[in-house]
Amino acid sequence: MPINVLVDTNFLLLPAQHRIDIFEELNKLLNCKVNVIVPLPVFNEILNLQNSGKPLLSKQASLTLKIIKGKTIIDNAKIDAKENVDDFIVRLASEKKCLVATNDVLLRRKLRSENISVIFLRQMKYLQVEGGIDYSSILRRKT
Image (cartoon, rainbow, N blue to C red):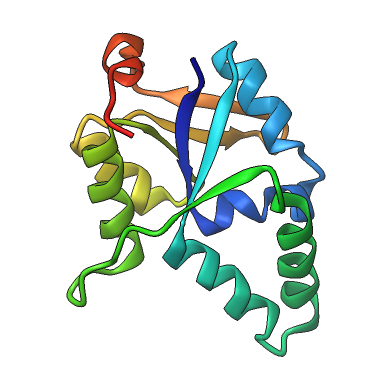
């Protein structure tokens, strides 16, 4: 049974920025098939970056959209008007009982304070998990 991993914007940009195959690396790290879940606000952030007018960022966002096409699941959960994207990711991960992949230090702290395991890029080379993974609760999660 695959494990769901929510991703944020900076994690999705890793393949374009550092030539890392996040899909292969997630499968290797977790030693199983992984469903990469992109919350709709994160997907929208990538679209906004693509149209940002900043050439490098726009190119990276365009490449990211090509890379993730057909390899991710877009989660259409609604963000509350008072929530920012990071708080939304914390809430969604808690509700869905899934891991989160991010390199955002502040988001990592928020997630760890809620006992949510975090996957991040270490030394610009490989992925690492922060926090123990309770596979039994993840496998029993609500989808």
